[in-house]
Image (cartoon, rainbow, N blue to C red; front, side, top):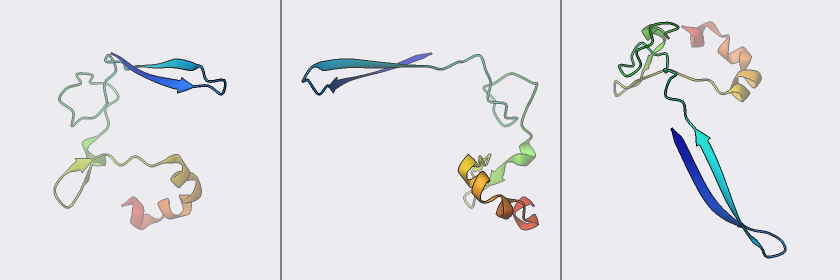
Length: 83
């Protein structure tokens, strides 16, 4: 799937440039979740036990930002957080 975003940019000299950015999305790669019913790829699935449930029964996979992982690794290694 192709997604295009076009914008116009004015240079210092006053010329107007047309800037087109293309973003290609692949539809042949699955998400890897066992909870997903759209992807039919049985290999390399993420287990349903990794799902986290919120107060209003919405389930999601937590994804940790890299800066949090680098700067707060001692907090994340705490046994209270892991379990």
